[in-house]
Amino acid sequence: MVEHFLDVKRVPSSSLGAPTSLINMIDLNKIQKEIWDNKISKGFNTTDVNLEFCLAYEELSEAFRAYRKKLPDLGEEFADIMIYILALTRMLDIDLEKELLAKIDKNEKREYKKIRGINFRVKG
Image 1: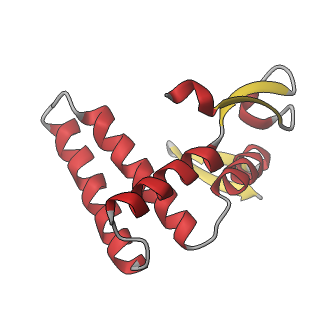
Image 2: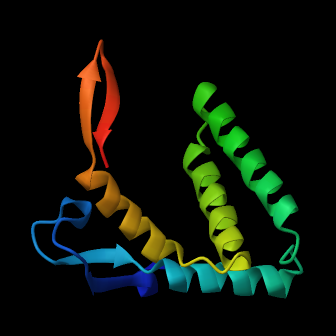
């Protein structure tokens, strides 16, 4: 049940454009653990990082195909991508939630200049 992944967390007020420092977020670490536990219980790959990258890439191409052909399973394909990404970050011992919030903060501080319709980073 998805509701048990929703938590109220304190994040920097600038993160995610939230008007306050409290926002509802999905706890990626909890979801990652559930995905990992499912992989183990079903006997899916938990050791071959190269294979997991290939499978994630395959899911990305399936999402692109669903988008191009206007297929109804586009959302499910994106969910598959997230499952593989969360499994990969577990395999590589990466705290994706922490990295995602840090990257959002970093991107917010970057400055760009538009030249002939193309954004070029000038700071950050």
